[in-house]
Image (cartoon, rainbow, N blue to C red):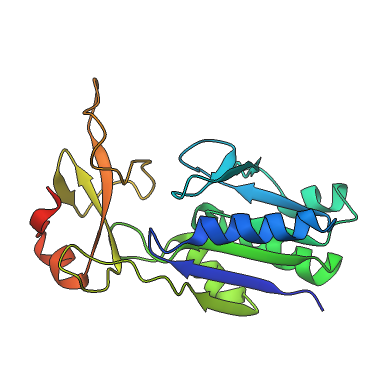
Length: 202
């Protein structure tokens, strides 16, 4: 029986790495499947901070994932990275892929945004998934405590309001942009997220 499994966590918890590993293991054994992503930092591919990557289908807002899967039959699995950015309809399409086409779906996404709120895609997948799996790799705040907040920094300052989706970097060693704001993300524990204390990260 096909299953919709949603694995979630913070940045740095290994979501994309596991997505790539599942896709590789299945594909290398001749199991037919698709790798999908949305708003990956490197475009139409799934990339891991460990340096591995693979081409992927770009889940643009108008894409009907059920229709895509049906057109590519026979398929046995979908691996869906950055699922927090999928629309509610696209999440429901993943459930339809499982229920009507008998295809296993492995979805991966962030649990919450920079405001500490669930992404729409995350919320919907938590509601409908057959299995909900928290990633076991625990990211850490600068203080050593478990990091459970993805803080957004604009020009080095934590912000708590703004657009839900703003693509940035997690590498504080990158050079300053020539134009516009420098947007990056930092993992913080709840205490330091709420206080805005970046400690030694600056």
